[in-house]
Image 1 (cartoon, rainbow, N blue to C red):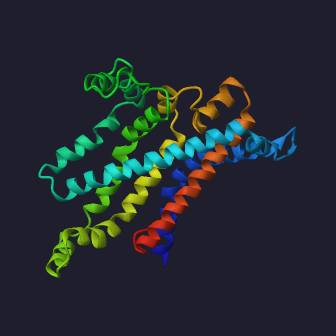
Image 2 (cartoon, rainbow, N blue to C red):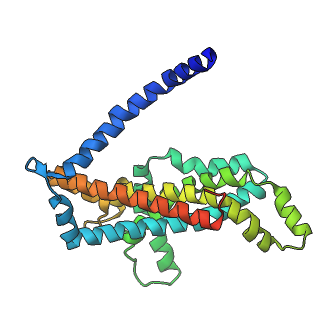
Image 3 (cartoon, one colour):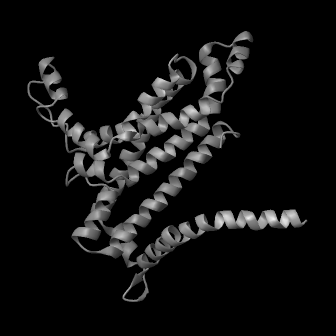
Length: 279
């Protein structure tokens, strides 16, 4: 009994610094942000949220943010799943392939965004190739729109999707697919019935990371977007730094938090339907 009591005190002593740090630097500031959105003139009010919902501009920005985040998440899943599957199953140089997959994460998002500005510019590589191949007579506007923002998001968060899937796919025994093949299942059937359901947990984790990152990213939409293609993160900056309206900025930030939590919950529920043991 004494050893069990001592172990409990040691456990509390070990987690106390982390709990204190999270409480002071995360939970308390978040609480004050939430509280400030429900106050106006020192009294309780919902005017901050009502004014946001009544704003056509906010609804457009909100729809664009959710649409681009979902689109980028879907593209990362489509590109990341086969890449992770190849690395985990068929790559002879798995270490090198993983290093290549995560190498972009060592580069600043600012540098990557500026690189896309050069690549997608009117005199960039893409436009030169399109004009040179005769597909277009003149350079196209590939920058400062939703297309360039989506490209930046996918390039920025694709490594996170691949790593999330790799961690799960590496744990799937190859004996399962071999057993399915010995029972007459084709490779496609074995993949759909075994590999994909067991990979859902990694897919959900990667989707949550990508969606959250796209919803909260600021550098990429600020550099690759334009004034008429704002998202919620740039809208928070506009309210806080340009208009000095911290209450509205906090309200927009709360909308971002609620949407992120709601989508994360939705992803987890979908994963449970596909595979009850996946989430």
